Image (cartoon, rainbow, N blue to C red):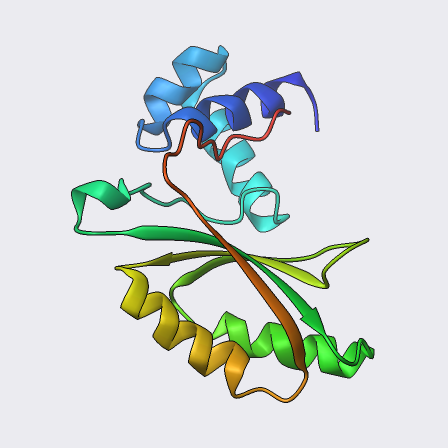
Length: 150
């Protein structure tokens, strides 16, 4: 990855909706060169996908929870089972294995507290391997970024 690739990535992280011509002009390469580089970055997995970031408060009531999960058994297959279970939940936006402390930290976006309780019951209360759940509920989001410095 060279400086041109880095400039392309930085600009796409700010606004992926710009045209290839606009992007090429901004990074000072020809449109075919820019298109080829973006294609290579995508095929190599550097660019995973392009999405629209939605403001939760604009689409209805929302509650963000940061949830710490500790499992009884931390064997690799049990950790993978838990990850597979949360991967199927659309309200779980992010899942991280962490150390030290809890085994997982989840970022969850639900409509309200009853929706969180339903999710907690489905994912945590009925699962024998979940030892401890600790949830924090966001009262205000002061920063949210998706951009990674490259």
